[in-house]
Image (cartoon, rainbow, N blue to C red; front, side):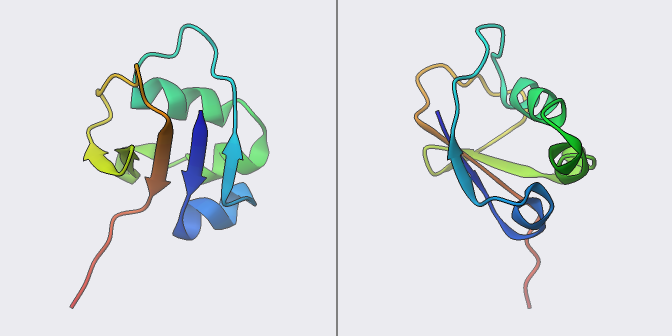
Length: 83
């Protein structure tokens, strides 16, 4: 699974992308974020405010409850504001 990190999620995690083998019990975006928090202090910090982090599966925005089955790429990014 390709994981992409953007903006302050990337800065806190210390990387912008990686390929990972997710554990078999990971089923949703929320599960992925919970698992990422266990991977070290940098990921714990990056996903500390996971409730505000947005996600996309294969370049389509999704909710945290969305199943990841069949996904090839998951992107994580903070909320975007504009003006």
